[in-house]
Image (cartoon, rainbow, N blue to C red; front, side):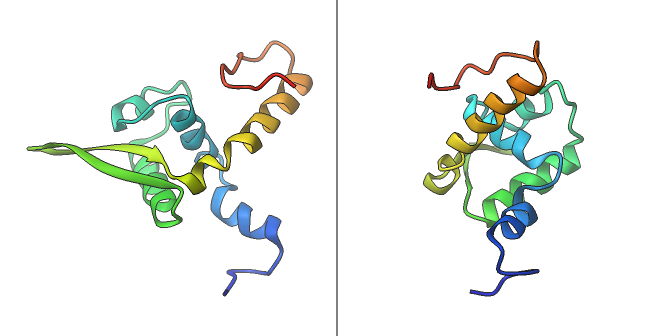
Length: 114
C-alpha cells in the first residue's frame, strides 16, 4: 500500500479526517442526517462547496455511500458504509473526552454508557 506522507497510521487518518469539517459530516451521518440540505442546516454553517468536497472525499475513501432518491433534478442521500460506521466508537470517545474538557457542551444522543 502506498501512503501519502508516511506509514504512520495517525498521519494517514489525519490526512483523511484531520480538517475541521470532515468529522462534523460523519457526526451528522451518525445522527441520522442523509440529505444535502440537512447537512447545510447544521449549526456550524458549513459552506456548500466545502460540504460537497467532504462528501466526495469520504465517498472516495469508502466511508460514505450515495444513493439517488430523486431523478429530476437528481438528488442524493448519503449514508455511512460499514467502514464508515467503524468510526462511531472513535467519535464517542472524542465526545466523552470533550464533555470532560468542555463542561456544558451539547449532549450527544448516541454516546454509549460506559
